[in-house]
Length: 130
Image (tube, rainbow, N blue to C red; front, side, top):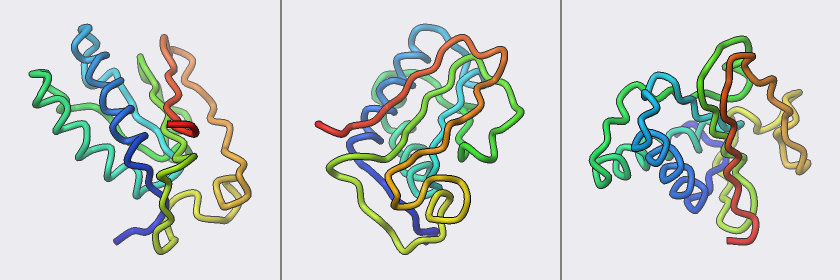
């Protein structure tokens, strides 16, 4: 359900990055995970819960959002998952970035997110050669 694109490798890498931020002491509510695809966000939520449980950290409160929906909000750390490279799978469409004017369709272009003014860290997770 929901359609869109996913990349399981990026899901695992992104979950590991967020888990590391949590283990370093960043509060969950200070972290946002952004992706142009809703389907990827669903996988990221599930993947993060599993990775956090294994690492013994609390991930409750980490925010997940499409890039478009997060515009104008603040976070201490922004982790981007662009869903590119081998392992990417297209769903049935209809997810954020599946076309339209956000630059996230199959053209290979990705939206340029406006980063929050108070953001202290930005991490981009993409797995083109993994």
